[in-house]
Image (cartoon, rainbow, N blue to C red; front, side, top):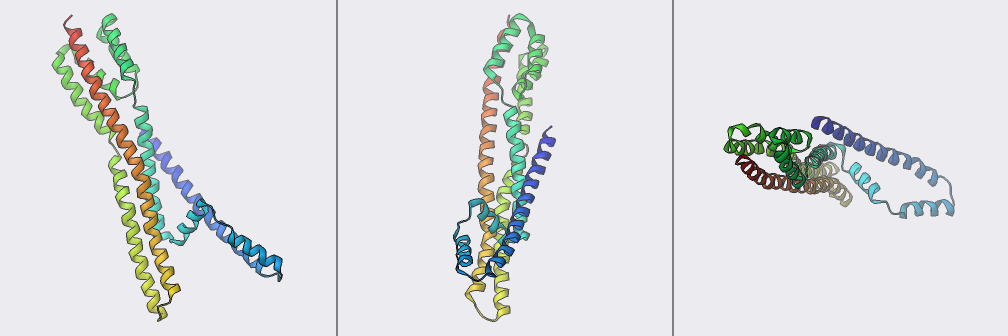
Amino acid sequence: MKKLIAFWAIAGLMLFGVSQAVLAQDTAAAAEPQTEQAVAPAGEAATLDMQAEADEPLTFHETIKEKFIEGGAEFMGIVLLTLIFGLAIAIERIIYLTLSSTNTKKLLSQLGDALENGGVEKAKDICRDTRGPVASIFYQGLLRYDQGVEEVEKSIVSYGSVITGRLESGVSWISLFIALAPMLGFMGTVIGMIQAFDDIAAAGDISPQIVATGIKVALLTTVFGLIVAIVLQIFYNYIISKIDNLVNDMEDSSISFIDMINKYSKK
């Protein structure tokens, strides 16, 4: 299930990125003939229309697409891939962690009533019918109830470590993409600066236009790399906070569950 969710999330994000790039290219291509048609007629009306279109401010979305195209497809595409894969893993983790949340107070209350009225088997049925890692941990403990309270406690601790590892699965990849995105941006900047100096050497003159254009294109990769890192860092911190809350909830409820089992075993 987790792999299926991750696959569809990656596919959706990749389709979104490709469609946005295609739309940006189509917009740029459609703007060229309009400019040529506007230049052809001689008159003040055509000149005023051209000035009005040039003075009209671009939206934030249009500005992002324009700067993305100006940055070049070589490194901008790689930075975009880090964003797509990072978001895909983050979305999968958020969905998984959200589905892992359990009302532990209600579950403990149901288990207490089940142990009083139906015994251990009734408590096992409640754990099997309840979604989430907390119920799974309690079920593993109930399986070893006949072996004593100490074995129940050991089982809960051991299986709790396994559940914690599952909750943290994939988070290291998000941190990798957070570090990788700005590094790729810096690499694109360095390569862009080298190309700018090559253009200066080829022109034989330090023209401000050549220098400004090359440096602008080079710095765009760094800007987008930092944007990707910031976006993924927000998701990363949110996921870490959810994992910490789930782990704390598991530990607190496990203590209450062991006390409940100990009390029940003495009857």
